[in-house]
Image (cartoon, rainbow, N blue to C red):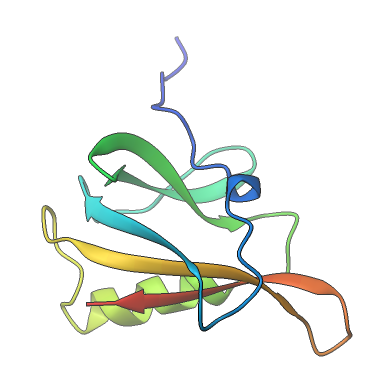
Length: 107
């Protein structure tokens, strides 16, 4: 029997290209424990009050920024079930001059 997941957050829906004017998602963790699928490490959350699965790290990507931010904030007890925070995201440029998704957490 396979698990049924809520819809995944699709990063392609967020198109901001300026860190000073990012896309902002209001996140409320349903569970603070990460889980893995075949493709990514994820978190069960409510995004703007809708239950979703938030991909924290895609296994095909070297970009671990969101995973590292999440683990650091959790270690500092900033992330708790039901405690809302804001996730800022935008498309930046990597040190190799390629497009890369960037993140910021605001508590």
